Image 1: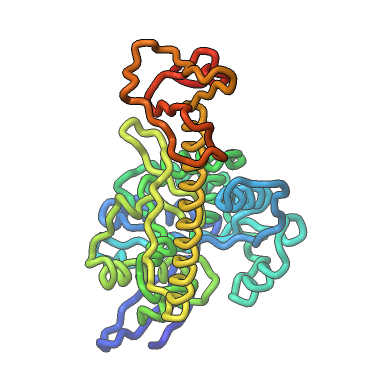
Image 2: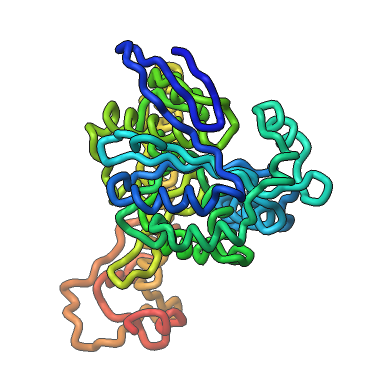
Length: 395
């Protein structure tokens, strides 16, 4: 496959031998309105939008304790998106079958960014520079985020439940888009962030989350595309090329692993690495049920160890059971002794119920060393009211 990256796009040679123009259109401040008008015209027919952003890295992390890893991830996202600026946005348009939009299918938006004034992580800027981003052009000709936000609101691609957004590990991507759309900092709480995401982008598929249900798939977007035998068009780490690769990868993944149909009840609106929320019947967000992970049988050696642990636990339980039985027997003997009354002075039987049938009296046969012969035992009779233990019986 051959390729040529130009201002007006890339021309590739397909395996069939037919030439096909796939255009990645660069958008700057001077042609922003013109290109957004084109997007408004095609969105009805090409409502699957693959999206990617480039931003200046991670410059800060939160401190303190967090209940969940997801909460920590969101606070990291929020703090960085609030402080930093978006550099590029890539949008690729397809129909429901994965057919790319004719003429232009991918737009790459370049935003104002000044290396002398704006915050950034040096390693991220170095990577983007090596990928071909010319920051001097962004400084001179880049799009103002406020202007883009206004045009994006009227483009027909946000606040529209017919638009299907395709992304890859996209928490930060949607964070920067929300910042552009709302012109405010992101919400403090993760659930409020997802409420905004649900409002502006009602239908989202995150490929990284879809991969959790696909055997033997792992890694980043480029590694996944290589596993699926998908060729990249354009330079890696530029938003236009990445969005195009995201779109083509999604449809190939859907066909190979999901039989051409994604179950929205399991995958729609879930961003990889963050708490999953669903809408209830009243439109309120609730925590998405955790997807069960596939379990694999442990190796034979581990199975033997587990079996030994189970046997040890069973032995301990048996010992505890025997000990409890012994304690119960001791308690029963003590209770029986409390029912036996002795009168060492006059050999009279002391019993509360004078109507008792003396034929039921049991005389112990033990030796005189254990019992004073002739003193009866009443296993079923009421206790003498003078007995010291009477307060604990027959309540």
